[in-house]
Length: 68
Length: 360
Image (cartoon, rainbow over all chains, first blue to last red; front, side):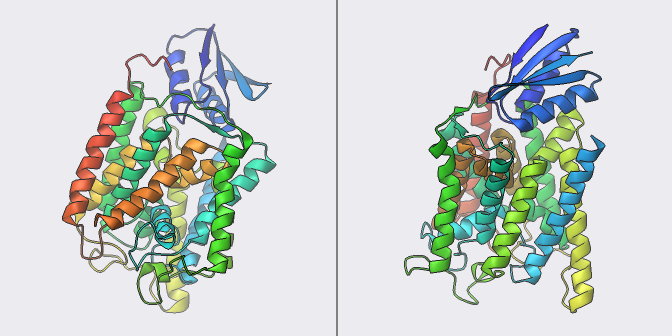
């Protein structure tokens, strides 16, 4: 499992980090973001790539669990 | 996903309609909205520059920020954040404005100019797309301005609060605020305060909900084959064009005049229209969003975006104080030099903030 901390990064950096990580073809990833736009963008991208995404609120942050 | 696209398309249609109607109600032609022009007019009203033709506190700007602010408070998205390279963002803001004022419009007005038949905007669009591609190349290599952090509540509230101060100054019109005299130029052409403010509030709310961004469209399509934002861009274009044609038929005054020469608040120098928007597109990708998106984010408590908008306003002041802004006669020599310097500065910022392996 890979963990990506994309908190505080401007659009579209969280999605680029996720895209680069998904290239490693692991079975699951966790992406941490801190705003709703990034949450939506990363979720949308991962779903388009055929992954399932679960969102967990974590204080001010969102933890996205991305699995095949 | 389908739903998201339908929503942004619908929002784009409403925004295009509002933009065209603002011209009907008194805004300059093809300038229902122009974030660059309106910030420039506001800078002038505050006396930061003294170009008598372009001085007015534009209520649309106030509405955009407050509309986004209100929605983000209601949805608990208002989050004071900042600290991601603010000085770099300020300087990018200055040069993005210089690029916009070479072309005579921000990316939003570029769409509206296309919808009004202004062929010069095609050159602007080509430059804009190339500028976005330049920025995307750096994003792919790991360009980042690093993280933003939580800020005190007041820090995030100050920029929206400033808009209320501007609204008071607009209505009270004290002698130290400058407004273009009737007939003096674009600054004197505007819809009534209530209409402009309402238009700004509605568009601000819609742009906040849909994350509408003029650079984001081409950027995301190239990077991720994600078409959502580009769909918003196209919806505005089609809607504004349709409303312009309807208005022409209904009023007998033409709101759609295809051609190159004699277009309102525009010039015909294709190369410099293109280079101005190249600078704008490149700079905006490095900032993470177009001038409209920066206003919306500033309304959500993003102080990096607020600093960017202040950079845009100072850039507008420089542009008029130093004779950089184009006019209907064309670009100025100073403006050409400033745009070339701007492209060089933006490129250096891109290179210096790009690492092969981003370890942000």
